[in-house]
Length: 357
Image: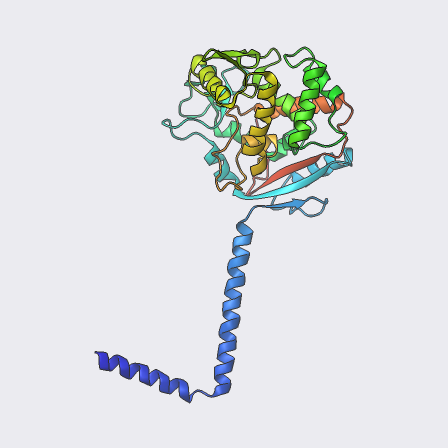
């Protein structure tokens, strides 16, 4: 057997030696070209799978591939010439996104919840665990239909909803202490001192202070909660204005978990809880690409190497509510037409028709 292999190798060598030198050179060149083409093909294929951000200029969106976007974007751009829009090509299939955000396993905890209220259609409840309540007993699992409606960017590219896409950064002159005072009036955040603290915290962290105020009102309500007014834990009074770590299936469990986190961070005043909470959101969300209300709720950016798992809240309606508060602050401070930046996600294989309620 060994002799046969050696004979075969010798035969191949003799064949190669008989090939003219010119043919050998041409063959080598062809092989190199083929190899380069293969490398380029693989590189292009990988690049096409990567998420990318592209500044919208009114012409650079494929209307047949992403139906319904251009008309809405152009209308907003016309009404607000100082606004800038960036297209986020998620490279994610729309149906797969809804499937992953949905609830299909009753042994797992839902990613999206809606209030247990007759205000919402019956088909907004998920098929499994339809009547099961979550958290403090007032929340229900959201259906795929509800998720699709709230996630469809074409339902958000409207005056009343678009601040879900606003980039949560500090913009000099766009956010003011007066604006913060107007939106926090009559709330637990009322007062010049807290308004100024909110403004300075946002400026220091390069985070939109209007977003901070909106998030606080969303989390705590206008009257505040036990966590924002001070909660006694291990003989100390602690504050957790962002409800960080507030999870559980009973009110007591939710409060204790949030208080434990606040205690571990040394948040023994509203000011400390405010500054610490802003830094937490910045490091955990904004710095990993979840820099809009929408992207904090729906984890469709993969800068941290994962999808659908890193979501700030379970409340499906939270981005819409917070965006409404943010817009109200900009309007009250007459800065709604400032140079604001919006990040709009694009999904593959979007349906022609907009998701309906």
